[in-house]
Amino acid sequence: MKPVSRRSLFGLVGMPAVGWMTPSAQAAQSALPPAFYSYDGQYTQIVPERPVPTKPIVTTGGSTIDFQRLRGSVVLVNFWATWCVPCVYEMPLLDRLQAKLKGTKATILPIAVDDGGKANVEAFYKQHDLTHLKVIVDPDQQVGYFYAANPGRGIFPLYALPITYVIDPGGLIVGYIPGAAPWDSPSAMTLISYLASH
Image (cartoon, rainbow, N blue to C red):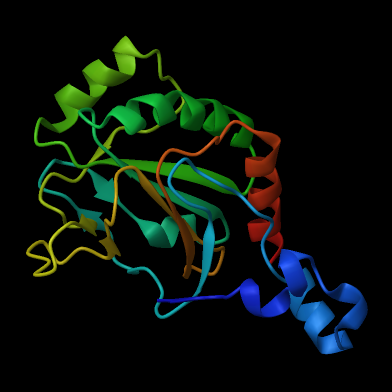
């Protein structure tokens, strides 16, 4: 996955060089996603390499993930765990965002990498009053993977927890953001609106 560079489109001292750019460079700058930051980094747009699988993935934890049924929507694929402190902070924010996204062409797939299975995640949801997110578990890394050997043949490399990948309406992985992010903020909705229109 190749990040799209912002730096090449900015002038001295990090200020946008709109006045000095050619029309094609100005068009490229306007095509960049709006800035969105987590506590560990920022949203990074990538050059899509391949679409997500068209066949459903049934995890050993008993969850079925069908990316094909989500075509036409922006999908935030969030990998997390109940034992991950930043994830505990982020999950209520994602729950509030999912409530805002109801009836739109955007959704969240929160995929827990816990070994404890659905019962563990359901208890976590109850404890933290999470009512809008689906319970999805991937204990054997069939969707996201930590290890270079990728024993579960996962699709998404897990550089950190939490980490959120973005799938565009055409089914392509187009970006990611590591770490807990302010998903209930106006800047998150701005990014999602941008992703839905590009």
